Image 1 (cartoon, rainbow, N blue to C red):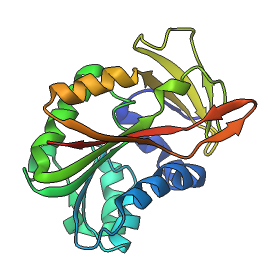
Image 2: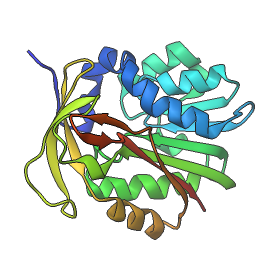
Image 3: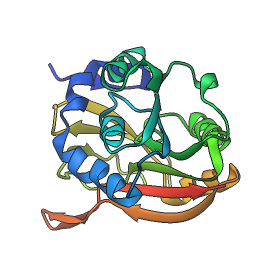
Length: 224
């Protein structure tokens, strides 16, 4: 039976699948790492780190990495990979005005709208005055494409401008998730309302599948 992830509390069910998503690693994680450049001795927070795959790569590149995830199971895996000192168990324990870089990858597209607001405001309080926040999520512009290299999609016919949920089945791991579609413009307004400036917007590399040109993920670079 295919595993199904319907809300934020259920991601531990697919922990092993998340650790083996090679195509996602080559798309999203590689794009982030190349964009960040030299991270030696840079203080990095991975917020919503999951099984700490990207955090582990950054630590191996010399970054001073801390991670937080709402899931106890994800945090336990992160401890095994990064060490106890790198894992923060409670969101209130994350130091304020401290980090040079904050990553929030593929989180805001799986939580409710009110939580998106709260997460972005919270991230602003944690970044140093000259730091940068990177918030990435599935590209809203391809919400109505039925297949990408990473997943099969089941759009429900809603317009791009309307916030709505739809189903995806991940090709790697063969598990099902609920994607929360919101427009790029909606996210931009939320970020600006939280007191953040959009300094850059970039995408993962483009490819063509069944006549469609696809860029799987969009990443916002933000500053105070």
